[in-house]
Image (cartoon, rainbow, N blue to C red; front, side):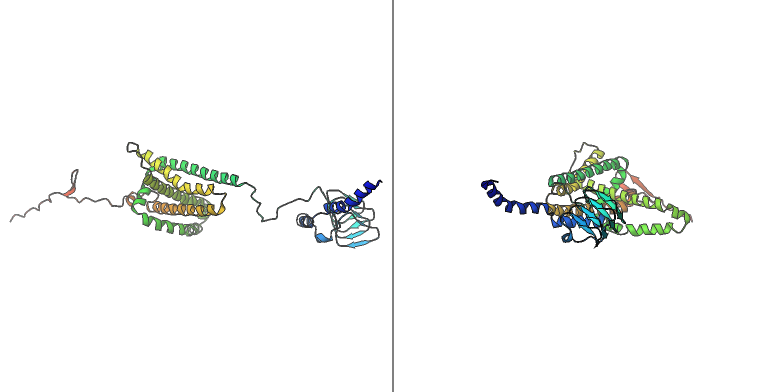
Length: 361
């Protein structure tokens, strides 16, 4: 070897050799994670700590006994006896003739060649399965733009579904909706109190219903249907009341032309009112990239929605889902006496009382 070549080797070998050895030496953290996953997912007990793993091939000579598992970052050859598992994290596990492994033989990135005796199970895998631990939520890998888009899409879809429901209610239960709106206008404060009480009594009322049905055999059979019917009734009352509040708010903000039909004005008020309530939710969705601001706006939207649902539920209960016309009207009909006559100009006036017959003397 020429002198310049020997000089270069002498200069670079001390520098390159530690780097190469360091590159072959795996990180202790990765070895610890591999051992943890083998213990957790493959059920291999008694594995040693990461600093006890042999960095390279490991051989158990014939006639020798090793207490505990043998784990190496390279091929493992067992010609003697291993009291435990034989694990190779990067190669084959070979149990020669006459060799004994009392535990499992596990080869990661290799094969298990057993000419000897393996008491446990033999596992050969290309890599250690990376399974998430139970109860640990997976990380959200979406970008802030994707999270914002998904949140806005959910809000827009909910608004569209509720608008379709509003059109259906307006077409098939328009008079009921009118009565709930009228009840809100006349008994606003009382509707809120009744709504709060209704929310508090939802579960107790269900319990009372179930207990009443459970006293008979036929009632017990009807319990599943009663629960479903009860849930549908509560959902219907809440939806009808919320739509009534939305129509009342929308009608106060948006004034339709006088030449439009009442149904068109009601539909416009419903659409505007729903848009007002969902505007806060849309703003919160648009701020998904800023968690603190989104939380504040979402709390305001939740408070407004809860207040609207509470008011609507109370009005729906007071008006009996819009079927109790007298409650919505707020007055009772005037009963006419036998001697009263209604007139188209001045209302109800007293007619001349019939004179009593004078007894003849």
